[in-house]
Amino acid sequence: MIITDYCMPGMTGYDLLKRIKESKKLKEIPVVIMSSENVVPRINRCLEEGAEEFILKPVKLADVERFKGHIIKGLSKEQQEQQQPASNKRKSMSEDLDNLPAQPPERRPRLGELSGA
Image (tube, rainbow, N blue to C red; front, side, top):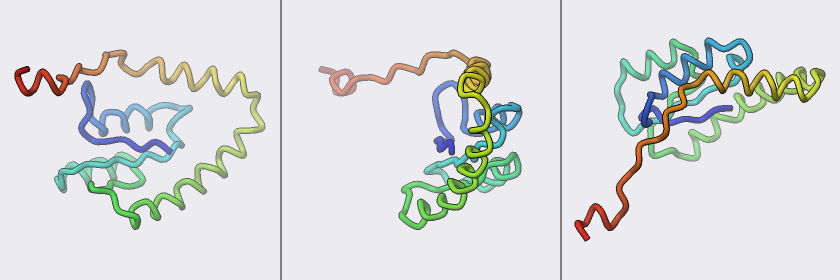
C-alpha cells in the first residue's frame, strides 16, 4: 500500500497516483491519498483515477481501520507474486520507480532562518 499526501513538492498526490496506475508493475498497489484540504472535485478526481481512499487530516483511528481491507487485498496479490523470482521483482519495480521524476525536494527553511536569527 502507498500512502501519500496530496500536496508535495514537485508533484501532487494525484500526479503520483496517475503514474502508479499507468505502470504495468505498480498499478495493482493500493494508493491512499491524504489532505488537510476538503476540496470535493480534487477528492472525486483522485477516487475516479483509482485511489482506494482519500482521507482528510487529521487522520483518525477509524480512517486507519479502513486500510485493513486494502492491506489484505495487497497481501493476496503479493502471495501470487512470490512465485516470481525475487531478483525479477526488484528489477521491474526499480525500473518503474526510475521513470518517476528525479527532482530533489525543495529545501525548507530552518527554524533559525524563519525567526530572522
